[in-house]
Amino acid sequence: MMGGEMMKKELTEEEKGAMEEVAFDTVREERHVAPAHYSMTIDSFSLLSDMVANSYLEQYESREFEASGYKWKLVLYPNGDKSRNGDGYISLYLVMADTTGFPAGWEINAIFKLFVYDQLQDKYLTFGDGRLRRFCAIKNKWGFPQMLPLSIFNNASNGYLIGDSCVFGAEVFVIKSEGKGERFSMIKDPSDGTFTWEVQYFSGLTGEFYYSKVYLAGGHEWKLKLFPKGHIKQRGKYLSLFLELDDCTKSHTGWKLFVEFTLRIKDQVQSHHHEKTIHKWFSASENNWGLVSFISLSDIKNPSNNFIVNDTLIVEGVLNRLSVLKEFA
Image (cartoon, rainbow, N blue to C red):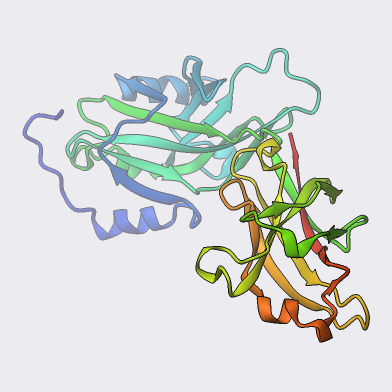
């Protein structure tokens, strides 16, 4: 801690009033952590103030410093920036220092905070408004013309000016758009979205499950998966039917695909089909969806339902709605 044994005192009512006159949208906070990007210590502040008051120069400019990939400097008006109603205040600004090589129409968007150090409490009083500010050729300077009333700053008991020495600082965070994003849309009834699979010699199927051929629809590869005697717990009771996304390994990490689809067993005579519509998100870890208890085997084998004709079962999958996600960079 600097400043010897001097003790911090409470602000007087007059000083509190002066602080309240600072722009209402300025947010003031205290913290112990030093500025992340630059600190500017000024010794003999009174001499600097007198020199500025007795010359055509109203300001002091810091050296250039780098933050967030760009060069900046602090501009201090020790007697206030009178051109912006800062008379009687400390005025402090952040300025983009080096724009050499920037293209025409350049702009840099940044959120920043400016600091003044309270040497008695070992704290920094920060000033910011949380807004994104655009630095450009027309306006390359942002800050606070009424940062701190001089009546408060010059009073040593407030801790900002001790032994004629003071410290200011800055943090600058540039918002860089990488141009990455996504566009989500839905396709209704995509072309070639109906898959018809004639399962022949149905009564002679002995395998646990069978796959149809691969169908291309909506920019993806699909296939139907049939368990003729049921999947595990429903084996011997129900026929199980699923739709599987066959090209899931080709998609990007973390991809998801929303699908509304219908699974159908066709009545080959009267079109009294048995069907179920399902809404699911497909992903790398869940690339097939359907129903374990799609239809009972007794209904399948019932001749009056016309599901099996000439020992052939006709299975269909229909894509009703399909999400499309396009990434751009």
